[in-house]
Amino acid sequence: MAEHTHHYTPTEVEEWYQFSPDSRRRLILGMLVGLGLLIVGAFLVSKGWGIGIEPVHEGVGGHAGGAHEGGEHHETAGWLKRVIANLWLNSVLFTGISVVGMFFVCIQYLSWAGWSSIIKRVPEAFPAFLPIMGIVMLALFFLFKHDLFHWTHEGLYDPQSAEFDPILNGKKEFLSQPFYIFRTVFYFAVWYGLWRMLRKTSIREDELGGAEHWYRMKNISRVFILVFAVTSSVCAWDWVMSIDSHWFSTMFGWYMFSSWHVTGVAVITLAILYLKDQGYLQNVNDSHLHDLGKWIFAFSIFWTYVWFSQFLLIYYANLPEEAIYFRERFTGYGGIYKAPFFINFFLCFVFPFLSLMTRDAKRAGVFMKVACWGVIIGHWFDFYQMIMPGAVGADASFGLIEIGSILLFASGFGFVVNSQLTKASLVPKNHPMLEEAFHHDI
Image: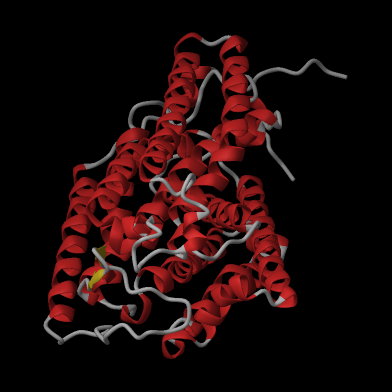
């Protein structure tokens, strides 16, 4: 057998991304337009000129929000609850997309994958958005905790209060506001801290070469995966499941992780296709796209497995404290959540399953773009139906508030990731498995 030889030198494969002034302007404009749509939408709804302004009904399993002080209930305006819930929804979703970038990279190191070495700088840039999301989520909690989380009302834990809730009182050690804040700070600190270590080592590998950096990133990946295995589930309980404070599901941590993960991989794939369209990453071939398509296809099925298993077990057991979650989404509040529930199922399972089933579809950029956008939109609706019934109830709708908040967060994420991509070569020139990636063929 002939001795294997390299077909490139590190200086030949370096690619430095240029975040052009036009791209900066477009993303800044996107943030401003998103903020403007959010404000205009909120104003129109508050004046009765928009949609989704019906008063909260005493419906199935819902709570109206507001503050409980001395047994009194102070109702928060429906338009404001809707704005708060949209900000929270997008914060949770884009936090997940950001941290999944780190998860994806770590999985590649732990599985000794070589094919992905040429694309790793794209997901490696995603966690740069985590500090912004951490600040936003903590600010939303401090400012609007009573509107998002029913369990934050102090009277619920006082046996002498008319608001006393024996079920929540049994959870008070976990649903403690200081403990909740500590956990949220811990999640962001440990995720971002481990990413900074990995990112620094990755850039040092470019500068110095040598296999020791690869082994160090492998060790960082081990720690991150162990931490993320726990924190991804617990943050799902904190940030989403506790909105429906009486309800619980033992599968919810996996459910939210699977939604995060497939959305993150879809965004990674779109970013790679965008870079290729701009003339970068030309050594990324159809086989790389095929592998990314397999990730999206496989985790769409995994998400569906968890989604259906959670539903089937609750339906079959018919336990009132669990079944109320789905009854609220099917028949509660006049059935306004039934359409998002089935849109979610179609875009998150049926559409990617059919569109990415064939080999050729996973190797075609156009098909991959359509499938990825379908997955991303579908999982936005996934988080919509997770969060809105408990946080907003009958005041939910879809309009300028939702479009503006999505555009604001997506443009902000794009701006930060584009800025981060300029800080290192798009191709990690001294990665020990880069040769394998250049000749990837399946």
